[in-house]
Amino acid sequence: MESVKSTRKINNITTVCGICTAHCGLILSIKDDKIIEVNGQKNHPVSKGYLCPKGKALASIIHAPDRLRHPLKKNKGGSWSEISWDSALDFLADQLKNIKDQYGPQALAVHVGYPGVGREFTSYYNLFCQAFGTPNVSTPGSHCHFSKFLAASVTIGTLPVPDFENSRCIVLWGSNPTVTSPLAANLITKARRNGGKLIVIDPRETFMAKKADLHLQPRPGTDGALALGFIQVILKKKLYDSNFVNNWIIGLDYLVEYLKIYPPRKNRENHRNSPKENRKSCETLWK
Image (cartoon, helix red, strand yellow):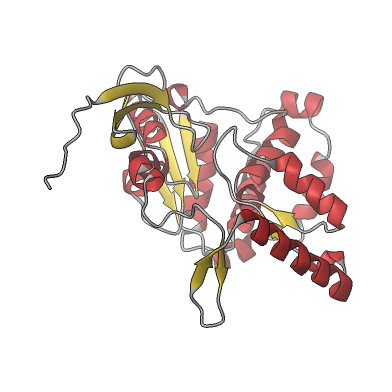
């Protein structure tokens, strides 16, 4: 019997990507209820046709043949068998009860994935952990977004959106936008053409590092030491707005005192760059 080919037309749907907060514009080509092609929306006011590797891979992610669609339970031999949702929930409930009875509620740690912007279920797993009695909960944001959000909120009250195009100096600290955010990389390139300076702080020699005015390569785990070194140079050379600091900053005296336990010579041991290059980066920031 000959296979019957679908005569359905290809529908192009204009939408946005929900994997991250960039919300890049997409055009999805749909046929037989499946995504067959993903393209960037060139007239989108923000992304202007750019897509990161994650956005480009949407079709393969959604229609992956090995995507988990039903509960699976591991057998004694190591293989997996499909079970019903009721059986899976009963099994989990029994295991959780055993853990709590034998070791106490804090023996349980919960790590929750990130299904996409607007699809978080934070309130649900927080309520579960509170009811169970464990404080041990983490998400991808625990080692990524939330630390940045908290630092920015405490410092300036919110998480700002960088104005790359109008910046005189851009610092990419452990950031590789060429891979993770092509749109941002494009804006940084435009800023460079307009005379903006670029400092890249990364142990690796990324694409942006090769194009930078200054590339600092701290040894892994010494970013904090480099930041303290920056602060020392900024304070020593008074590369800051003294009027703003005097009127709006609390704790500068404590910071100056704290820096005494970390003399500049310690910074030299942690980085591949010379002290002169580190000082130059601070001066570039101010200019």
